Length: 143
Image 1: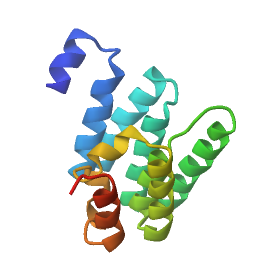
Image 2: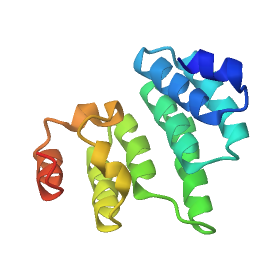
Image 3: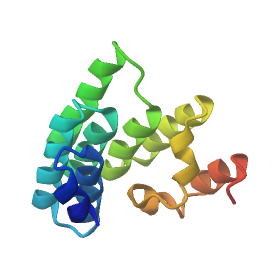
Image 4: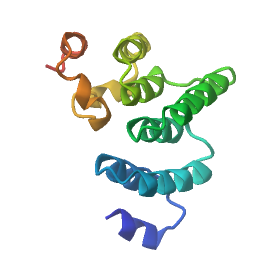
């Protein structure tokens, strides 16, 4: 469906985001990063795309590049709002549970709308067995 959407509109950045996420979940990291880089250009360094690139770097074992994405998001946060959810995603990919939950708590405090998909977001699947995850979902009435 993403390919069909891109055939109609090759400038539709959202389709590249979805393709990147699909490739990441399938372990096709090179392909994922290529799609996400297209989205990055089209969507002018959106925080969502940067966090997905950082997450993909992290889960593919490229921790140094994931750290660079975190640094870039921190720099951007000096000029505009960057959702803590995006930071949490990269930390989740790095396997840094405590940092992930710190950022998820900040997202909760900010009433970040993206948290409504937290229960099903594949980027946070490794955290589902952590009691803090269940606690957060319960506080949002998502359990």
